[in-house]
Image (cartoon, rainbow, N blue to C red; front, side, top):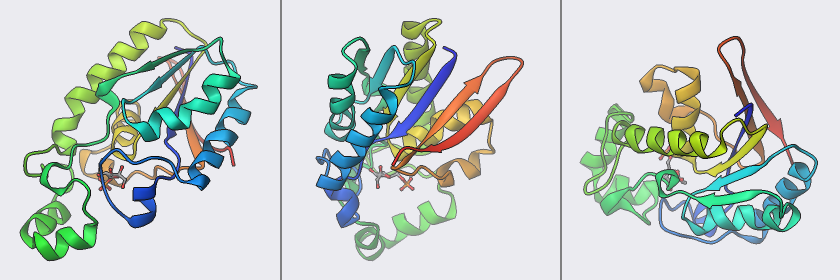
Length: 197
Ligand code: F6P
């Protein structure tokens, strides 16, 4: 794979309410972001699109799928967002007031913290690495691959190429109106944050 374009899904109803996890749909603004993404990538050489199995990821891919019937689209569960376990659907403020010890533990060490009955960045790494390996194998020497992931997932993918210190990974900036263009060969490493809206 020569060029990897790493996008986060568009704005969801949960993003607006400040809730985490779940399987929310895109808002009207999120759908506009998906349309803008499709416009941008109608002019870029891309042959494969990978999404998670979540609705926000496939809804972000939908306009692009219509604009680029030549692209192969696959939903991989390895790219589903971090499972917040008992905290799924909660707002950070709710966790702080209802489960203060959990909130404090995550604040202390966000990378190594694991949600009760869920995942943490530390346990996510194995699954994301597996998904990335699978996607890169499927795409082979494709000129361009687009991956529509989630905040924590995209942080893990960036860290795979960037070799960041683990404690920095949960804080990498993952916007919804810009994507990361990654070129990582033995001789060249390029990371560019590109606005599409
Ligand atoms: O808020 C959106 C979201 O994708 C949640 O589903 C997820 O729990 C969170 O981001 C991950 O970001 P952080 O690790 O900063 O809480």
